[in-house]
Image (cartoon, rainbow, N blue to C red; front, side):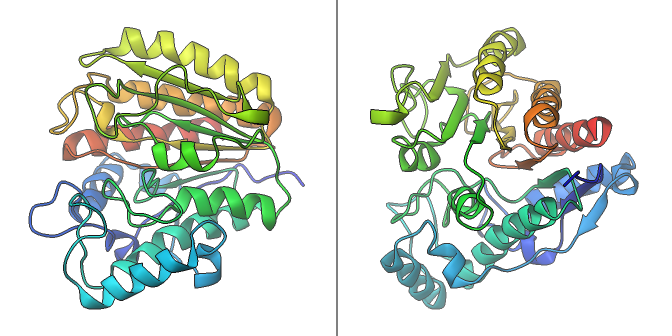
Length: 318
């Protein structure tokens, strides 16, 4: 099946609900910071706006342990406390909000596998720290883990490329698939000696049959675009050699200069470049299919500019 060259983006109140209260860096205003800029520059007229969709519990269980899903539901009803040691607060309805993040990912891949779209961006998604049985780092759920497992179990996709340019190492995804040879991972991030979660070192390249299917590129605090482009060349060569059937980008904007909780100095143009190059790889090997997720980012202006660069790259390359 040949995919449509249309580009879609999921925005709306249900997706916006995934955010934490009381001045938390991951607030609900991140959604509007992006979308207001997209409207201002006319990107909303160049894409199809898609309505967020909730997933079912069975979808979550493709990646998450049943005990964790029950824990998340219980804490969501309680509405107070933390899901982890102190980074990820509970808010009333966090389970339902998480379900819309995962469900939008799944609706996106369903539409793409039907040939309706070739590129889709989901800004409030890419929760890359949560593991199968534990929340972490502002991530109550792993939409990415569910996405990858759904591509395999429901659609028979085997070779999946996951590329992460968030300032933080995507540990929740990496360790879940560390021994899986069919999930290739390329991750550029601030060196774990200086930033949470303290993982993602260059020697971590996959285990067992998956040896050499993972590429971690930790970079020093203060790294600028010259470091990004040097690192990106390695990522691109690595991903292209794998000939992926589906491409997933986690485009965290916290690697852009001026983020309040990281120390990177990339520019928004780096994000657009990464997406544009991955779109080319998707066209070569994946029938054009690429999903990008917003991931982290806590400077609202950086979110607006970085994510709009990603979406613009999708539009221009479709």
